[in-house]
Each structure stands twice: as C-alpha cells, then as structure tokens.
Length: 196
Image (tube, rainbow, N blue to C red; front, side, top):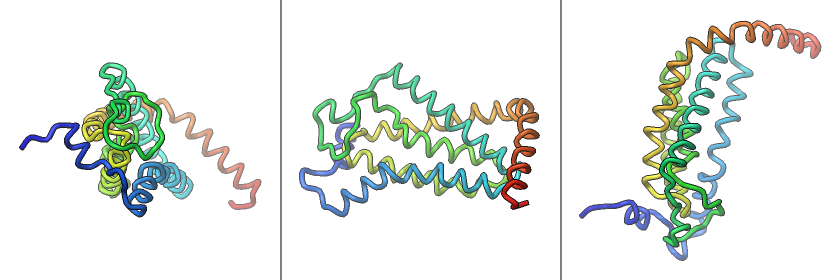
C-alpha cells in the first residue's frame, strides 16, 4: 500500500466529531508550545554569561535563516493548505497562504540543529525535535498542514542551521564591539538597581 500526502493527511486529520480532549491538546500544541521558545531564550540569556549569550545569538540567527529559506520555498513552490483544497476538517483558523514548509516546525527544528553547534545547548536537541514532531502532528490534525509540509521543514531547518554555523565566526568578530557596550550597559543597569 502506498501512502501519498493526501492519504496521510486523511489518516491524521481530526474527524467530523473529534474528542474535546484531543482537540484541546492539539490546539494547545499547535498554538502555544512554540511560545516556550522565547521564554526559554530570555531565561537562558538572563542567567547565562557571554558564552551562553553567543550561543543564543547563534541559534536565533539559525532560526532567522531557516524561516527566510522557508519563505523562499513557499514562493518557489506555493503549496495550498488542505482547507484551501476543501480537504479534511479544519479546527484552527489560518490564512490561506502556502503551507510548505511549516513555519512552526521549521523554527523548532532549526533551533534543534543549531544547538548542535553550541558547547552548552546540545541537550536541547531532542526536546526541540520532539516539540517539532508534536507541533507538526497537531497542525495536521487541526487541518492547516499536510504531512509533507511538516516533513519539508526538516531540510529547510537543517539548511538554516548550516548557514548560521558558516556565518558564526564572522558574526562573533563583527559583534565583539557590541558585546563590550552591552556589558557596560548591563553593569550600569545593575548598579542603578543595586543588584551588583
């Protein structure tokens, strides 16, 4: 038996009357799990030293690169979303823009790949990859992506992380004066708040 994109979508997509618990879980994963990224990023930034912050800038650059590539893929290969083709059931409001690749999954997986190039963040690879799988499942279940939209996020995320890795030495050299200013501003702010 062969499984094409539409058939896989039909297997994963919620039926006409999905359970309330499954629907609530899928909506939470599809919309809110990705918000853990900026919260975690800020927490690590506040608690970390310069080496951690350089790693955080690196993973942010990887995410920007991957999301930029995702936009280019969407322009080059505009793939309609399932609801635009009147397929399945849609349980999450969404614009009818191209769906390939999934931006949410691209973001999570680009961060996962980027952490491989860091000294302290590689422990985040599996949680981020797992989060991408959960978000991808939820967005297919809710009818806003095809499974291939999720799968296409993998090479795009890897390419974005690869570009960030190539650019990292130049970025570190270019940003050195900015780090000195940032450190001075941070020390001044801590003195004003009497936290130093």
